[in-house]
Length: 207
Image (cartoon, rainbow, N blue to C red; front, side, top):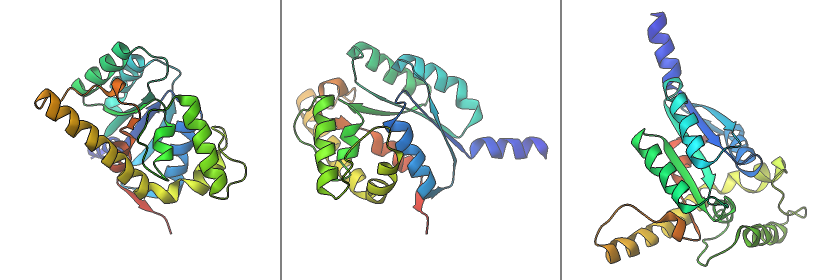
């Protein structure tokens, strides 16, 4: 009975590992605080490159039902990103990747992005969006309150915008490459797959 109880406990855990010390970690902590899930959600930070994140995630597999890694293109070479994605898929580790930065996902809470942005341009645009929405402090990665007050209530909008954008990219690529499914995420700016992670969490808004 003790062994069965232990196995059930492990299967109820959902581990998110990110190399984003502020935005990503603060966002998922705010999401966890504002929503219920069938999982016990744990958010971990690791100042590591994408491949190293996968290695850590693999070590965590036996401790949880699902393990996901969250990282951006940043300055990592495309080869490192693709190596990480392939290795993660091989070991059934979830990948939430954003190009150029996590702020693509955050902007999608307000609208769909269509044109290429640098990481600094994304931050500037997100700051302006928040000010227009009445959040006078604008955007700061270290401001945990902004995620609670301006993002968690817009999850459905973010999922919809991200899905539409990514589906368009994939459809265009499939048509040109005749159905290949090894997608060149590093060539797609902007893009994000964070919505796949959020949907996997099976969230329900707390009263």
